[in-house]
Length: 579
Image 1 (cartoon, one colour):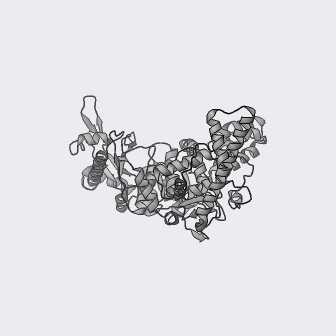
Image 2 (spheres, rainbow, N blue to C red; image 1 turned 90 degrees about the horizontal axis):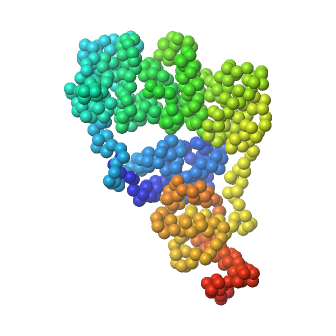
Image 3 (cartoon, helix red, strand yellow; image 1 turned 45 degrees about the vertical axis):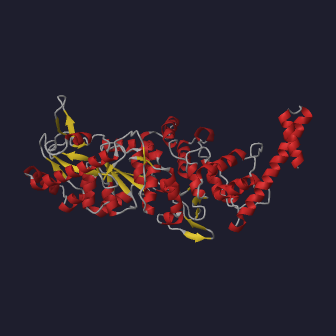
């Protein structure tokens, strides 16, 4: 990235995109009246409550409350950060992103990163060549054949071989770049040497197909068996997984993703036609790993060896799993039989047998409470008390959701402790008023104030600010419910000139006003396009009248009880004259 994305470009992008086309490409929409509807992609439901308004360029779910513009949808649906969502949206529209130049770059410059990516490709090609033509490489090929890896599969994963030499890379490529890429290690005397020597090499590609690091495996039992690239400007092992690019090449929307422990497990499963496995890179699966994978599938299956180390690794994964389990996401735990890994088990039981194990993997809830049931004596009060103390911290990590409420309900059932004040959390079991109840309220029954109507219409139609500019209203002395937000919106429209509600909403991203702006943007006022101007002007007139009457009443009351200063007397005279 060579600079910030200009705000003007983001605004133009939101004008160019049709949110209906964007969302329909991810979630099939059906036209109903003025809106398009679907089952919400952000929570499980039987009847559609997810609505997309083409005029407002805005989506809203009346079930879970998810809402926003096209950028918000991509951030929520694909679990992208803001910059990634803008990049994806620009790609969808088919335009390039301009960048503002900035004096200070906190990270490597784009041209430096491009040089590193180019180097990684060259090194991967060198390793692949060594696997094919060198005498040492032939031993590596023999090892791979014995593991059942075909030439085609080795080609799909770009497998290679690092010569057992101290300077195989250092003598062929730019040493500065090699050091930056983590491919060289610098001695105390300043003389660098190759990090990977005498190993089968596994290039690690990100989801954009760029090689960001390497993993290497020895051909014998020497240690360390596996060696990974260190942290670099390209490679962050806590955020990347092995095999994701190859998985997405086979299926961009896999039904499930299997998380295994090693490179060879991923490759062995792919060799048998199971193309939905990835591996964490020498570290426990983090929340960043899981959020990345949930962008592409709603179901993740952890696959661990059945030995003590595997069981411990499965339990460590709970920390990350609970933090990212929103509604619509599912995690299962698959513990393998003793003395088996995925590679050996798929060969023993065959593809169908292995797939049956994947499909029959325990749900997270079953595994979680089963773990405590095996560990604690729940027939005793002490065991049930320990259950609460041990399980509750995990459950509190769950995002607010129906699943969280059900997990707490299960904990209450197992512990026999039914006091809500002990186990209650912000995910209450009390029913909430469904947003659909309030969205069809008529305008004339007194339940929608003039201020609410005026502000909502202004948010949904920023052009209405021009009508107020023509009237030259003095807002300084007017006070009414919602006045600060109304004035704030008017000032934002005057400063930013948003083309529509989606652009206006983007101006408030990350601010305290974002939530009320979103609520107002999808408030159904039942006003047809040809009546919008008239209803807005009428609401503003009533608002101004109410505000003036309230102000006049305050001044008269103060005059009677306390007296007025000279400025207040002039204001009172002016208001009485106008009246």
